[in-house]
Image 1: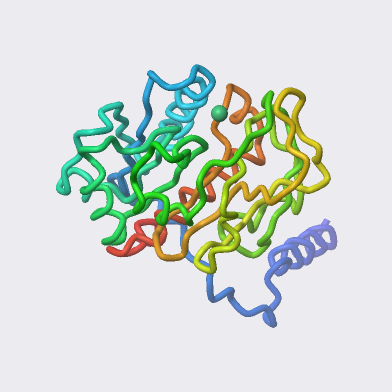
Image 2: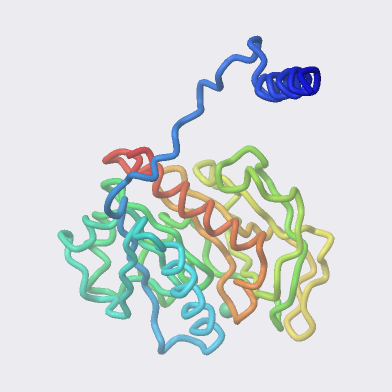
Length: 274
Ligand code: ZN
């Protein structure tokens, strides 16, 4: 009996030593989980427009639900508006990031939006948020996006193989090197954003998709899908068409990474470090 107890004691002592041998140094990046954080860390403003193309409105409403779900526990605050022409500098200043769901500021709101971005504001634009052509008449916005004007698209929307251009970037670091995205419409731009030295492309459509489309067929060319213009705290994401984007875990992870990355570079300090 005593022998059994000694053996049990030795066994428990061995277990207690498991996993933390004396030679292992503490991870210098380790931080205690800060469960005790009270109150929201930052604010997000979602822009959308129910007058947009039906498939864009479908995406927008799913995106509003997605971002609101991420606020569980009041980690951050999400406001949303369809009033695209009514921003003041003071209103925009309170947001760490503006998430543009297939929408861009209307004419009256362009100057405050420019001032917001030029002074370190954050922006994540989905799909048609970057659409611009000869009628747009907003040269600053085209420069902000990296210089590209809409050139063409595949039609109908379909799944496609994407490839990472950067594997070590915070937006892509835990994504597969290539993955199939649910059905969407991909835009091609001219000039190609990649030609701009200030643009960093993070994800692209794989050339293995070509030809892509059944009605509107694209046979080749550069198709950046996610990129940033290093002159701004901004990220463009081509996804944003139809009701399939939030059915895919890889894409949801990409969207969360995007939000974390843009917010983490807030000039007032990283709210995720508070
Ligand atoms: Zn579309």
